[in-house]
Image 1 (cartoon, one colour):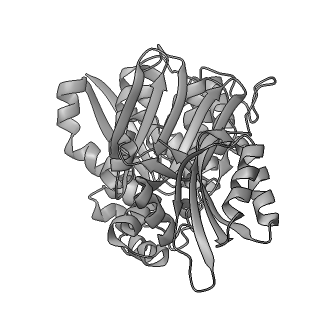
Image 2: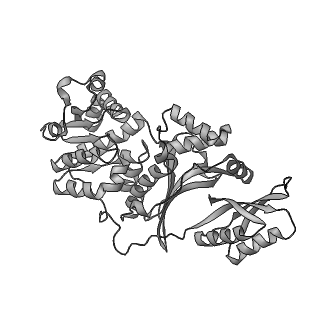
Image 3: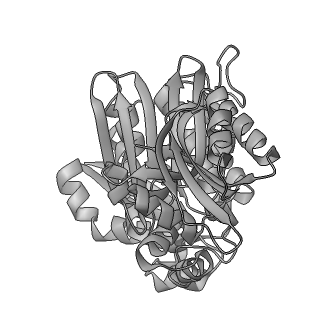
Length: 426
């Protein structure tokens, strides 16, 4: 039976979960996969944490050099996070010819070109299933499940923290601030939640997934990003009246105008499969030219779901002699000639505050019409004591520039102002 030695860098939530899975299932993997995987080293600054997990003291390394020079270590698992020490340690492992498995989306997003160059130079593997969507096998699906297709679009809920917050706001009537505090209490959100709630985490993942799906480098700099911190109960209430729920979506498309990649809060029609994805669950909805629509759903974070993805990569690396690398030229920037579309096409939701007088609505629709924007749905609320009416519109698909131009012209009217703009997926 093939024996494979492993080192784990970092024994936090995910590292501890990974160690638990590997030790609990060791005999199972011997029986089903024909490989004996043993943890030969761990690198953890808190030695007491390692000892509490039952790791023998002689296997606790003091520095990265001990790990990368250990002849019994074939695969190094990095679960430290960040792009400082983690980058240094991963490069050290790859340069020593060790295959690396990582859950670090920021590292993979920003430095996969650098890591892959080192891996190729030293005949090492580089695997990162756990970097995107936790335990959901989205990367393996893109690489080994739907590779017969030209992927035309990919749309998903790929951040569990924001999905939990929006679910609490939608189903429980909580404010954004209250839902965020609850997410922090449960450990879904960090003390500083910026990476999640402002869309950075989802943007890292979308950059990685779009590069794999579209077989070309999609740098982070090309991903348009908006977070959920401005979402209000009024947005959610209007969405429900129109038959929508609100989700932070990551969207990647191949269009005639180029690749578009964007992360933003979005109204999703209630009968769309993504509308039923609640709490901390994630899902990715893929469309291929042959397979049509495929959706993957599951837990997007947590010790065991993410550990599951890490161990899946470990087993794949242990049972495949040939290393697989990117299907595209993986450099820091996109290849010359690759186009990225910025003038997206989408349907839009507009909430407009207007003077409740005859002719005001006609002025608004005239501006929309002059920008080739047609309307799909209209709600008009009863005016308040200040003779102001709130008009809610949903447009048919149009261009982003057309919406921006129309909003600018409506805001120039003395009798109306646009209070909210959201994109819509039917």
